[in-house]
Image (cartoon, rainbow, N blue to C red; front, side):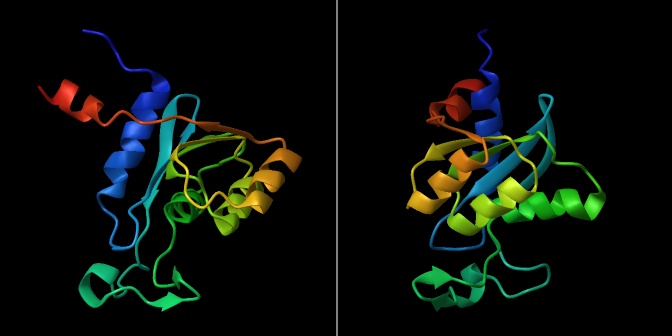
Amino acid sequence: MERISWNQYFMAQSHLLSYRSTCTRLTVGATIVRDKRIIAGGYNGSIAGGVHCIDEGCYVIDNHCVRTIHAEMNAILQCAKFGVPTENAEIYVTHFPCLQCCKAIIQAGIKTVYYAEDYKNHPHAIELFEQSGITVEQVPFNKEIFLTFAE
């Protein structure tokens, strides 16, 4: 049996997390990794105990659902909540991070961003990642991995 690469393994984790998303507009998952170990995971959804988009619809302002916390932010906040350092970590995200998540990733000290799909790649986010010396790499995810290894 051939093992999948680390990038595909962690991206698979992010895709699996995305299935927990409660926003109906886009399902996103994020996995934060340090030294080849998962330190946190997140998906886009409402605040703990809050109303979910899947139950009452999205709350859209300026074409953006403001009910949800993005997957990247949820993963970073999980680290903050439990005192897990994110300095020099990597993050695997199912979609290119939005501008706000880009800034949070930079401030968290994460040094590498791997993403599977382009999604409104904001030019300023790209510029900020470059200015901050953060490596950004697209890792197209092969969903067949789920089927191949499930057999």
